[in-house]
Image (cartoon, rainbow, N blue to C red; front, side, top):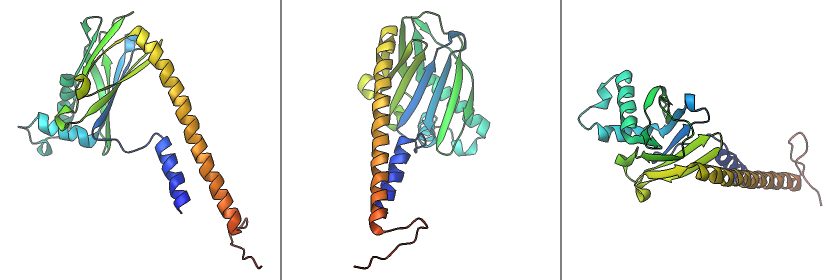
Length: 214
């Protein structure tokens, strides 16, 4: 039983569907095609609701409609996400919202992302009302990908350039490969142990345990 629990735990951790941390957010800027640049935001619904409650402290969120709730959430995000590309403040445009019981996702178009930029400044402090919050910010472009954690330690700010994107993309890719190999080895080790354990107990193909007479 312990072996089975360990196996399920490993599979659960290595998969993409784990419970979202209320004190963690993910923001992803995709500019692989500048003309249709998009901003994806992924939040714990619990953490988002707590932040909205504190930010709109004069509004009883339990009495408003879902439509109004979404409007407040969008405005909150626009007030807490500031991106500047080569000195040009980016404008968050139309988008969609998927409210969930555990995780809420947002996706917006960026109206004015310039071509051939060199630097990107990000100031993202969503969730700061909850305390000890951090956001994983990723910038995806055709040359590669960069990732940085924004928190109180760096005042929720970072400055990325094209060269950093390429270097960090290679490091992240290597890290993903190593992590995947280690996870696979752990799963195979547990499966091997389960097989050995079943063999020692004398379990036949039909799942019946065979008694051994000495």
